[in-house]
Length: 136
Image 1 (cartoon, rainbow, N blue to C red):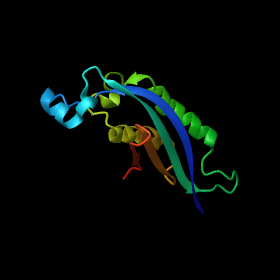
Image 2: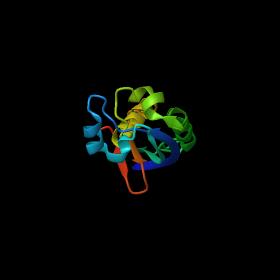
Image 3: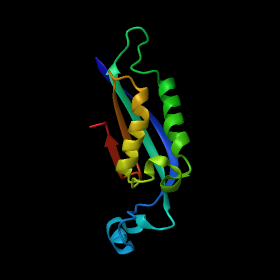
């Protein structure tokens, strides 16, 4: 029997959607206000889900305490109150769109979740705008 367990988390971060190889006119046309040279911020909400078989011995798919600690270390400590463009190495050459942030988070977490389990990341940039990535 496969079951999905999930952990919610939160972090605040600033970013700028911008391609340095484009001029300002094209950046503004594509990214609008999100291309503000002075950056802008979001209160990101995150749901990390792990799907797998229930362990007969523990009754867990994954120990939620371990999932909480993993998300705190790999995501919250790495991204909270950061300027993603400036302070987070993964975005040095990668535009920090919600899609790319979700993929980066998934890549940070995947090595810590056993291969027999599916990992899924849902990132809310706003209450109405969110992306989901599961490694596909």
